[in-house]
Length: 305
Image (cartoon, rainbow, N blue to C red; front, side, top):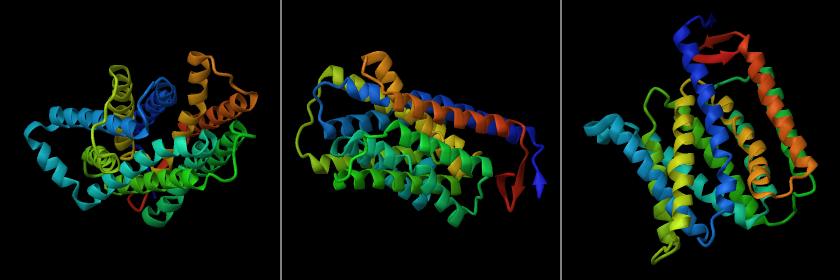
């Protein structure tokens, strides 16, 4: 067992944590943006969100690699193609689940991502969790339960299944990019966007008209918010264990209702506010705890003691 004293690794890890925190705050505005879309239906939103996302990722890859862009795409191999495919499935199912079941049911199910990832990570990557991480996951999940107390509904099986597919697909994607962290897996994002557009075109044959207002919001969703946080996530998985990277989903869940309350004057319940505060405090306590806690390498993996 070799304790980490490499300042480079710790600096990269700190940067990964910082980027994921900023990215989680940014993506928490998703709900607010979606609420302001006026006319576009689900499939139209998915298509133009994916189009904007793919365009933003392609521009980023082009400026990063220029003539080497095709080589970098090929370099991700079959694992990268699968990763992009399951991420595309996750993104499509997420939008559909938000309208085919209650928001509470969808978010509650999607909040299982860290737990599903933890199971896959333990079995496939042999990544063990620190006790503080396990406690944080449990407390944050209790916070989610409190947030949606009284709002969860029995039934709506199709919507709940879509939310579960979202969670499982994203967990698989996380394991894939974490296990291939020595390769630049950013092209996976481009694959996922193209896959989402293709699936939408198959489902909705014909034109997809959209107003300028709604197109701008879809571009904000895909090209800016989703593009930024997904790039942050790919980078973070190089230096954070898989489950730790997905913990930041809880920040998005906690903040989303607050933005809708602040900017759209929608009523926020005491349960929602209390649950959100519990989530944020649990994440903060873990961060402060690990600030002074040692990290070590075990069998080639960066672990938390």
